[in-house]
Image 1 (cartoon, rainbow, N blue to C red):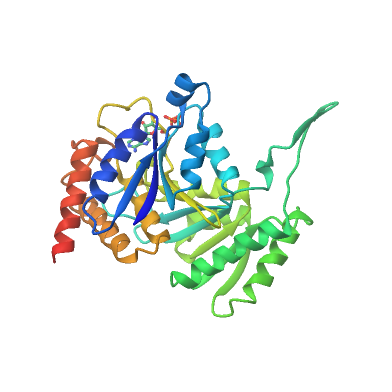
Image 2: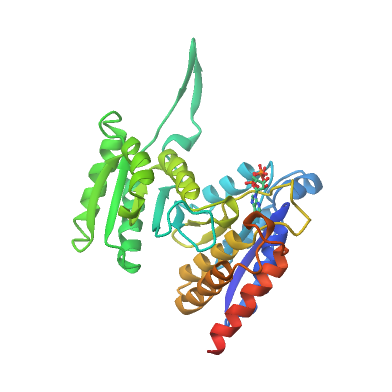
Length: 332
Ligand code: ATP
């Protein structure tokens, strides 16, 4: 049995979560859910966006599924990443049928360092401006590069690309690049290469098929992940994972979308694909494959899609279609 912490959060987070749980119900797995509160609504009621009991719930679970938080997102998700030391941000870039993907054949993943770099939040004013610290440590570089190579090995990926700007940021990114190649030496079967971040931003548009696994520091990863999302269609389609040594949290990339919340208009795909990532993390590979294929079937068929994809189905109707494809596949 898996203990899963469920945090629906705000706005469409609730709708995409309930429809995803409806689909997971079709799997042949023993999943136990405990619900936690976090986000804007929680802040209004309790004066804090993230309750201690929610933190404990996540700490004591095997894994967490998170919907969305509104204005308080930074106080919730950034805090959870820090408290749980979720040092990896994982963002797959995959083309799905029937979507606005600029390319039809993409399947790579961005592994972003989640805890340091430009986002340590150490800024100070000076007489005529301000200074931000960019912290890169050997330890954090090592563990993120190790994760990327291990991910490549476990998922039959042939190559890992380190992205940096070591020609300008000689000390910080110099350390990151050096650590990357030290780790590469431990994985001789996997090709290792590195590019500058500016060149990578261009290659993502000119030849994105050449990437397998990209590993990079916090700010560069944040920017390139959104470029990746732009390559494969709208916000409603992109899942993500935050992974640490002992725990992980999976969430759609989109936020609470207050403009469409409560109307059944939200596309559940990003949340469903986040659940696929969760199943992969739990090493339930068969269930992950089945669910992924069922989502693929529904997108390809194009009969039960939400309005953002040109359809007229509701969030739950689309999810129920995924469930029925899942059950079909499980029966066959
Ligand atoms: P937040 O403040 O929580 O980040 P936001 O509206 O600023 O919310 P997002 O929720 O990320 O930012 O989304 C931006 C817009 O994209 C939404 O207003 C909505 O129109 C659209 N959108 C986002 N997610 C979905 C989805 N799952 N299905 C359909 N449309 C979506």
